Structures are given as C-alpha cells and as structure tokens.
Amino acid sequence: MASTPVSPVRYRTRHQPGTGRLARLVLVLTGLVAVLAIGPILWGIIAGDAKQGPGSAFAAAPPGTYALVTRTEGSVDVIAAVRVDQPASPIEIARVPHLEGFRTRGAVDPSGRFAALVVVDGGSPVQPHASLIVVDLQRGVAERLVSGIDPLQMPLWTTTGDAVIVTRPSAAPSSGGAAVDLLEVRLDGAVRLRWSQAALALAPVGWKDGRLLAVAVDARGSTLQADGQDLLHLSTSITRDWALAPDGSAIAFVEVSTDSGVRYSARVAVLDGAVAARAQALSAPGIEALGAAWAPGGSPTFGAVPRHDVVMGDASAQSLRDAPGFDVPLGYSPDGSHLVVMHWNGSSFASPGRPELQVIGPAGRAAIPGFEGFLGWARR
Image 1 (cartoon, helix red, strand yellow):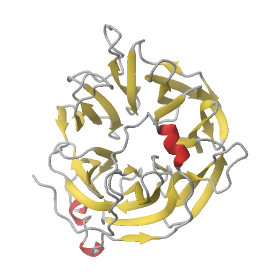
Image 2: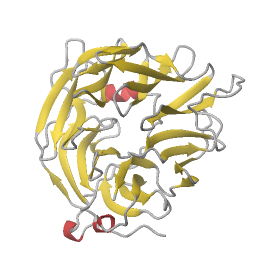
Image 3: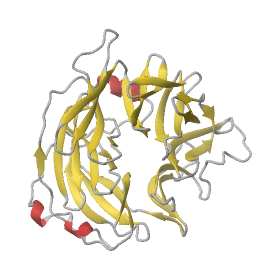
Image 4: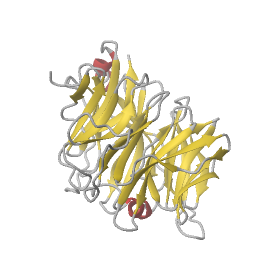
C-alpha cells in the first residue's frame, strides 16, 4: 500500500541564537560515521496549511504499536509511522526540509506524541548549522525551537516529555580550547543552560535518580557524568552508540580503538548509586560491534560480526544471528516484543553490503521498505 499523501508543513520559529564553530564535533566523529555525500546546497521553505495537515491520517490510524521512521528525498526528510504488523504500509506524517546531503536525526518523546529532530538547515558542507525542530505527530505541525546547535547529535527528551536536551558550541570556550553548552529546551520555547563542559563533544544519554547523564569526550577519553560531575571513566578512547538501561542501572556502549587499525568493541558498565563498576567487555576477542539497544527488563543487544582476520566459533550471545549478514540494533518497542534494526547483507563492517530497515518480532523479521532512519515508538 502506498504511503498516504500529505500537505507539507509550515515551520514556526521561536528562538534564533547565534551559531558557533562546529568543526570540533566533526573532527571527533571522523572515522566513526560514514562520510556524508554532499550534493548541491538547496534550501526550500516548505509551506502549507497545517489545519488540513499531514497529521490527520496518523491521528485517525487504528490502534497498535507504531515505529516512527524517516526517509530522505533530496532536501526533504519524510517522517512516517508504520504499524509493526503492517511495516509495508507507512502513514506519512510530515516533510521536514534540510540541506541536501544531510539526514535528520531525532527521538520520540515518552508519550509518543512529539518527535524532536536535529535538522541541518543552514551553513555550508564544512560548517553546517542545525536547528532543533519538534513535530507534533498527531497534527503534523513542525516548529523550530532553537538554532545553532551541534548537527551530529541525538536529542534527549526529559522523562516528563516537556523539554528536550541538546548541545551547542559554547560562546565562551574554555582555556583549554573547545567547550560545549548543554541546553534544556522546553516545548514553549524557553531555553535553560544546564551546564557548560570543556570537551570536544558532550552526548546526553539518559536519566538516573533525577540526574542527567552525559558522556564527555575529551583528552582523557570518554567519561560518564551526572549533572556535570564525573561519575565513571568509561575509556581512554572515543566511545559511541551509548544506550542507558531503562532503569538507569547500566550503560552499554561501543569503544573505538585505533591502536592498530579501527576496532569497535562492545562494553557495559553497571551503575550502583553514585558508584559505577569498571566497564567490562561483552564480546569475545575478535568480535566487533556497532549499535546497542536495551530490551525492557533485559540485557543489552549489540550488532556484532567477526573480524576477517580472526577465526571464531560461536559469537557473542548479544549478537543478532538469525539472518545472513548482520544487524545494527536501533530500538526495542516499549513492551520488548519488537526490535527495529538496520540490516546489512554483507559480511563485515568493512564490507557491509546493502542496508535495509527491518522490524524483528514474534512472527520473524520484515522489511520497512523505502525508509532508512528510526526515531522511536508510539502507541495508539
């Protein structure tokens, strides 16, 4: 079934603070993400009548569990919902404009009503400028809340769903160089500075006992912090793909080692109040991992494959191994019954093959055709 046609949405802008230098974040992530294919710079303002809006189809959708997904069409990202038992029948919600060659990142709030998006909507390929845009999934209305934020980040919702945590380059760099501001942006447009951090990058990852947890990447490597105070030194290396357990009891992540070529290793650290155990390896020697997701009440799942130069027996129990190729896990449904993955039909991270967004559930796995991004979950 074809996706439901919709009218494009109009942005409402609340805040436009000055932008800062973004090169430091790009440097940190060099080699950790695929190089963006930058095409011609094209920016179109998409306007339409929100009252006749794109959200009406999803608002009237039948009950069920829906994955919120995205696909890129040139300088526009399409936001859609797919029911887990009908993954080939997307319901289009909104179209979000951006600079061609970039892709929207985002997260769905705890209630499944809003999607917070980090959208590259200005600047140049070497100095992209990004904004925080929130889409009302029921109404299909998009609103720009703040600009000048770091473009290569994942927004984090507060537990109450009334604000979004994002980062931006600090206007007052530290004596050691780069610094990052961590912002709390409310849905009414109010912006509060949570704290500033002298770091190359700062990634908010979740909440524990009312404290905001974030990973700081600096000269020490990677350090887990709570409300700006060091909690646990995770690694002397860069880390990525952080996933906090639903109860805040542990954090899973991927450690990136560059001692002898680039290696990706699965790690987990258990948190016990203000004290955390040292991060432990979860995968056997020779197994590399990308992506991490926690099953509700369960253990973390990693996407893992053996290295070409190592002959292995059985791989890590955290691997997804019921299909040829390998999976990068993106997120479990709230009840743990379904998992969205990016499935690659190749044999390794070096030779990944072709990607396909899929949902895995009790009935097996099924493709979500035409879509390549995952935002989160919503129930109706």
